[in-house]
Picture 1: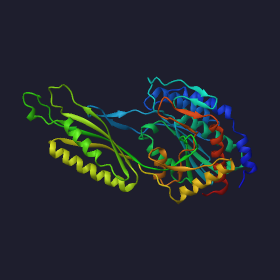
Picture 2 (picture 1 turned 180 degrees about the vertical axis):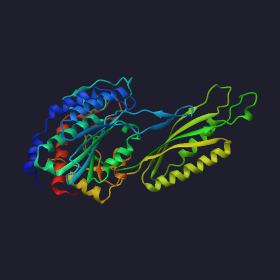
Picture 3 (picture 1 turned 135 degrees about the vertical axis):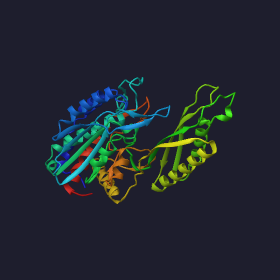
Picture 4 (picture 1 turned 180 degrees about the horizontal axis):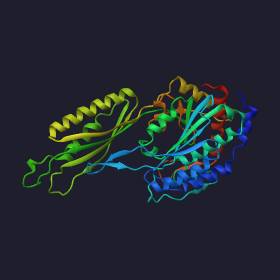
Length: 401
C-alpha cells in the first residue's frame, strides 16, 4: 500500500519549524508534577494551542488524593488541573489521544535550559517526555482536520497533570474518556531508533506505616517496640518476594529520631513491578503474610496504604491489529516500525485496563528521559506527526482495526 492523495496532503500540511518552536517554548516552562503554578501556566498555553482544533476545551479539577507523610499522617496531595478536548462526539469513529503536561523536575531543579545539543538534537527538561509528544499530537490532529476524512472521526484529547507520579488524580478521567473508543494513541517518547513499547508490566506503590512504642534507649529499652527495626525487617522480607514475573524495590524508610529514644513509628515505601495479573495476586498474598508476621514478631501495628495503580498491559488481538496498522503506515513513510516489551509503565496501562487497544509511544524519538541529559531528535517531530496523521486517517476510513 502507498500513501493516498488524502494522506499525502495531510503530511504536506505539517509544519516542522512550528512544532520545534512549540517544544522550545513549552519545555522552558517548569511543570513538575508538584509545581502547581508551572502546571497552570502550561495548561493555559496548551489550551490556547489546542483551541486551533474544533471542539470544546475544558480544564478538569483533579480527584482528591492522599499521601502518607514521613510522620505517618495522611495528608492531601495537590495536583494541577487536567486539560480535555472533545471533537465531534457523534462521529462514527471515536478515538482517544492522551498526553501529560507534567515533568519529573521540581520547581527548584537546576535543569532548566532548553538548547541545541547539535543540529539534530534538542536538549531540555521534558523535550522528549513529553512536550515533544504533545507537539506531535497537536500537529497530527491539525493535519487530519485539513482532510475530508475529518468528518468521519471524533476524538477526545486528555492531557493530565500527574502522569509522572502515577495519574492518581486523573485515573478516573482516563477510564471514562476511554469508554467506547475504537483505539487510543498516547504520546510517550519512542526509543531513539524509533522502537515502540509493546507489552508493559504493571506497578504498585505502597507506604506501610509501622507503629511501635517509644522508650528510653538506656533506661528501659525493653518497654519499647522499635518501629524502625520492624520496618527494616519488612523491607528485607519484601525484597525476598521478587521472582519470576515480579520485581520488588524497598525504596525508603522514614522514621527514627534521637539516638536515646526507641523509635515509635516508621514508614516503609515499596514499589512492586508485576508482569501479569497472577504476579499481582502473588504479591498481595506475600505482602499480607509478611505484614502479619512482622506485626506479630515485633509486637507492632502495621497499616498498609497504596495499591497496584497500573495493571500490566498485554498485547491482545485488537492491540496487535493496531500495531500492524501503525507498522503499515510507517512502511509507507519509509519507516521500519518495531516494538518490544518494557518494564516501564504509563497511562497506556490505564487505558488498556479499560479494554481499549492502545499504542503509547507515538511521541518523538528521544532518550535519557528523567535526567539532565534528556534529548529529542528534531527530525522525529515531523516524522512522528506524519505517522500519527496517517494512522488516524486510516482508522477514519476503515472504521475498524
